[in-house]
Length: 350
Length: 248
Ligand SMILES: Nc1ncnc2c1ncn2[C@@H]1O[C@H](COP(=O)(O)OP(=O)(O)OP(=O)(O)O)[C@@H](O)[C@H]1O
Ligand SMILES: [Mg+2]
View 1: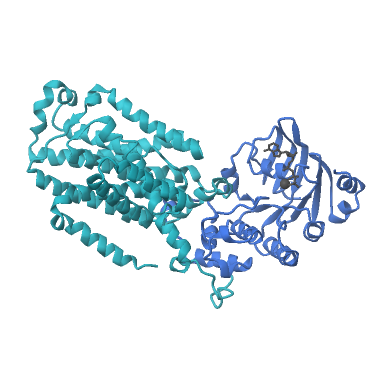
View 2 (view 1 turned 120 degrees about the horizontal axis):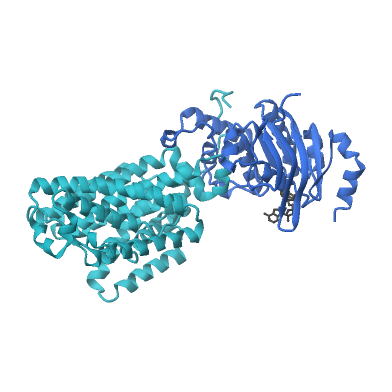
């Protein structure tokens, strides 16, 4: 295997130094970390467990709104704040109020999304294959409309979030590091998780759920827990993104189903679903191409991204890492052992 | 006699107009190897499916060690210690052989926090011994979906052993296995029964295999239990001979 410690060191050094090395791109690189988080959490269900969710964006949006409500609610009455008379209040947060609200908001977003994931699991894990995909897509589309119709949280008009109690440059750097930490935390957590029994169990569900049931695996429990992990980190990412944007509204910012919602899937497929590094690689490549085409191919950017997705699913279905694994199997440990048996080891344990 | 491991009483199961099992009664005695034969489409797999809770039965009763299980779901029954293998071999095809075996540990007592534990070295050892037992040790790091059909059957058998079931229902364990390897497989089935103490209930078309293996046999025809007895009795039973010759 490629030495993972070099990858870890490289990512960490880049992550910590990036705002100083590339000060003009802090926002784009913050977004890159969020994209990595998106791809990693999508892959937990889509790649590792074989449940292609097109609705994970719901947790991003719900996390964003929960955080906003909590951040505002610790100081003001939310209904007043979102009413026309509340407009003057956005800048009225003392630093202590702001940071307390933010910390509680992020926490509430994560926990709230986990609770929501438990509820969704009851309904959606009865669906298999394309029905699950379409069911969750419906969920994402409905969520945006529902929030848009709810005046308490500003309806379709959206909410302006509390203003960061310092200059915009410090805000950019502050949220940059929060994005970095949440993406790294997602990676470290999933890396551990996939190395426990849990990892094998969700892989078994992916390969043959009926067999897994016949072997007595607690499939429902595993599926629910898997969605909860995704929801937890996605909720945090939504809370951060909302605060970076400063102004949130349901359709474009909180529940962007056809952009972020689809990017999650595209990035994981591009890098290689069902692997740990594939989604990360996919997110980096995808995000780079997206940013470059947005800058240099304006007007054609969607065609460029669409072409990338088509090439990926037509010619490279296994993604970049899956392709590498087929080409160099021994790098990935897929070898026939010359030894005939486990040999001199102690016998009789079986 | 002690409580039968499996006791099926008057079980019927239809699919639309097709009566797959009609008032079937039979028993699997603990510690023994019991055989089930019958022409194609006679309802053998359907009976297995009913026993392990794969589908609800229309009527009758199914008991496992004296406890009624006909209302339980597949996973609950599996966790009680009754396991089946599939006629169309089923393994986790994108995982390697060791992983296939490891994930098959018994889930009887699994708690919530067990989900997040690692596999101790003893279990990895045990998995490798089982792979050695079925002759797949060298291939243990290969993706199981790349194995031949026969090798996949052996892997599925090893997975079942890892689960330490009380009783194992095998649906045509030798179908698709190279004839020269069949004797080895019979030997392993007997060892699973004798050394690991697993009660076996085996569907088999290969008469030589089942005569060699089973102590008691049942024969289904057109969904009904036609005869039961020792292999010799079954072999010489005129109704069984007629069912096989007149099956088509
Ligand atoms: N899920 C199902 N839906 C409809 N019909 C079914 C189903 N399962 C089995 N049958 C029918 O029930 C009858 C018995 O099938 P079963 O698979 O139990 O036979 P079998 O004895 O296992 O045959 P074989 O030796 O070919 O495996 C057949 O007529 C079959 O078509
Ligand atoms: Mg059958």
